Image (cartoon, rainbow, N blue to C red; front, top):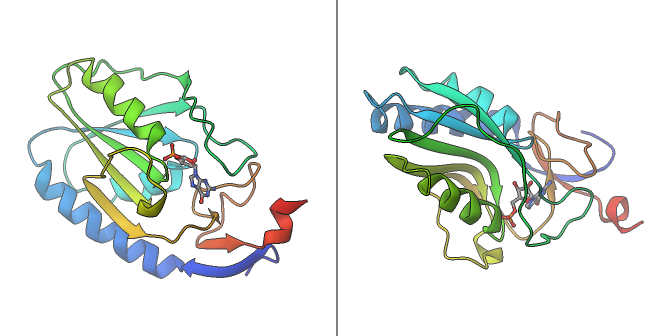
Length: 179
Ligand code: 5GP
């Protein structure tokens, strides 16, 4: 285990089993719909890469970047598009792939934006959900795990751009971000 990690919340094996399960479920739901899977960069990249390989149906991928926490651990409430989609979404079944939903601000904004572009459907799959932190009415359509109100890193999730490559999800030692 990495020295900066206090506790592993979800092991690599537990994550991969869940991703397999979600992939199977989504394959059934999106059969014949050629969904456009939208990865919200950068945190959702490992989840997206694993998930699409467990979806055994034709699909397309695209990537979007929005401003989020940066080096801080609290949402600013300001969402800015840093990189927009390359694919037109009108009439498409879009599936937004997220790493974690906290306040829900980022996703509420994104869904509104996508629906405004006349998608056939716009749903959300998130690996992690922190429902106790929600300030919006947003509920993910598909969710991997509920996590407690702690700042987590690994499997795409960063602190100041570090720890994204850990294969597990863990809680960072408090001294790392209190300095
Ligand atoms: P929301 O808009 O739902 O408050 O925040 C969503 C974004 O905040 C996520 O995509 C992620 O980038 C970041 N975030 C929220 N909670 C955590 C956390 O516990 N750890 C990390 N590393 N990022 C988080």
